[in-house]
Length: 129
Length: 141
Image: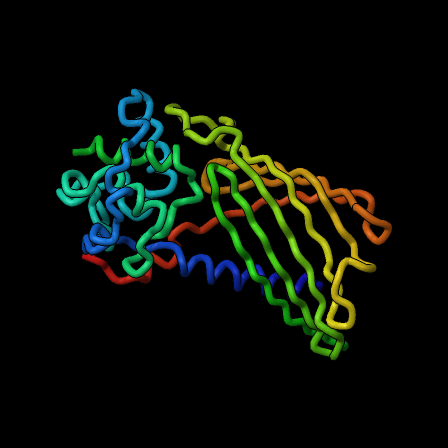
């Protein structure tokens, strides 16, 4: 394997993986796709005092780039302080969205974070109401 | 000047299961000068040292480190598919998610047969562009 072909492969993979990431979901249609069982899931970190602070750290590392440092949204990305996120969506709904993503609307899957960190970031987002 | 041109195809599969990251790659490579297709694979599992994040900022928290094991090697070519006459390696991997999106990885790899180099040391520094294409995407409002 030559270094040139390796570089080409890496560049191709970078472009493909980047194109699968990114973007935001804001039309709310995804909520109708959440199975009832997922919707009713309980956040195991909900009552843990450190979960919001830990979730904020994760949020700043991975989410703030699109949704803004204070989750107010950006020109292209929705606010996470909206009624849809804060009142309409359950913790289970948001967990489902973070695991599965909604690539048609630009929201990538964050399954790589693992369940505990996903629940922690949901704790933070829900604390913003 | 001789030019060596190769076509390389990679099937990259990854999944996350109960905190474990599992990756399986299959590689097919062809020298366009006419040599047969050559095949290879890589398989790895890894897991963060801690799944939940800590409340305070820290560069060396357990959740910033991933440990695992990786195995890779050749699978022969179209004239002889299989492990015969191929090099095979197995070794532990350690990744550190450094601040600002950098990842530092180290892995000693041990040759498993006579066609392998006895020990390889792999060291890498990488940067992931998260949501790179989001800058060009329409608003979903």
